[in-house]
Image 1 (cartoon, rainbow, N blue to C red):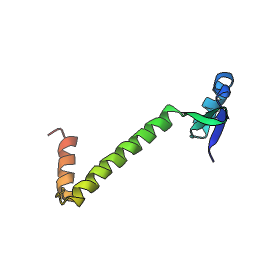
Image 2: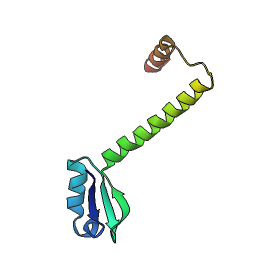
Image 3: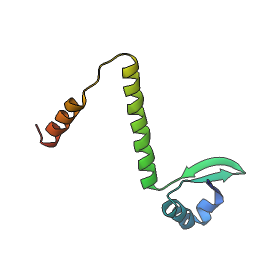
Image 4: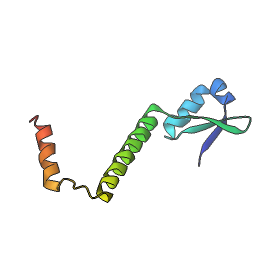
Length: 89
């Protein structure tokens, strides 16, 4: 269930909103005059969200490549490249 608070709470209850973001690992929607205005979240939550968006972007590129008939790497080729990276070769 979304957490919705008036924007005045940001000024008056900053610690409370920060606690909600950290303890419930959720973002808080802030409203002005009953309308959505801002979203507040913890840095950890933001970083995970950003990583997810980047991953979806990469998956979309991969799907487009497959749909256009591009050949990808085999499993063994990927493992070989990863091992080379890991061992600095």
